[in-house]
Amino acid sequence: MPARTNEQWIADLQTEGPAREAALEDLRAVVVSGLPYALSRWVSSSDPQFNFLVEEVAQETLLRALSRLHTFEGRSQFTTWVHKIAIRIALSELRRKRWRDSSLDELMDDEESPAPESLLEDAGAGPERSVERADMLSRVRRIITEELTERQRQALIMLGIQGLPMEEVAANLNTNRNALYKLLHDARLHLKKRLLLDGLNAQDVLAAFEEK
Image (cartoon, rainbow, N blue to C red; front, side):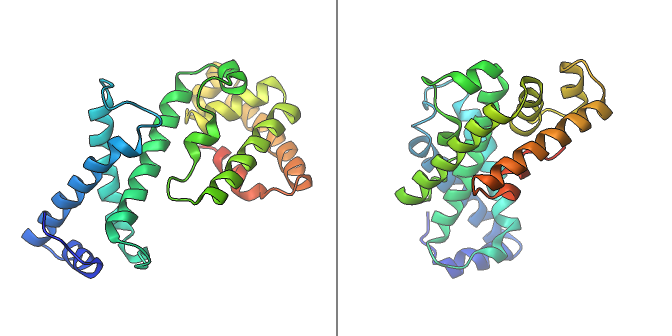
């Protein structure tokens, strides 16, 4: 693989023809080679689905990196920047798969399995930032448990974490779309008030629970 400077990566990816195709293939190789180690904390490379996950993440990473080339500020190596994008995408996918396959009780009470905050952790963040973020998410989980009814928690988890569409969430809760909107509206109001009292950024936290 030819060595490129940050400027060469950007130039090759912004052009058309063989240079761009070569850069994309090299960038894909960087992502694929780095993911097994980066994800070893959460999933084994011997898992039957691992190769499929890597290919899926690599494709999404290339698309996202191309769409965000204008945001690269050159503060790190370009490949490091892309690798961080890949890790975020992979962890988001692993989180979605794990939570989709878990019951509400497991999500709220299982202390043996990886905590949600560990799957949301920014792999590029420093130790202090990671601890701060884990603490914030732990507090949010406690607030959800204390402030919301069981039905409200189920709706928020299915919609905001498992990524289910509104119609499916309504069907799972044996209700209709309008009633679900009201349930979610009330839940977010309760959360917003409590989050503000606890000094948390309500806008950032509640963004995860917007209707799909």
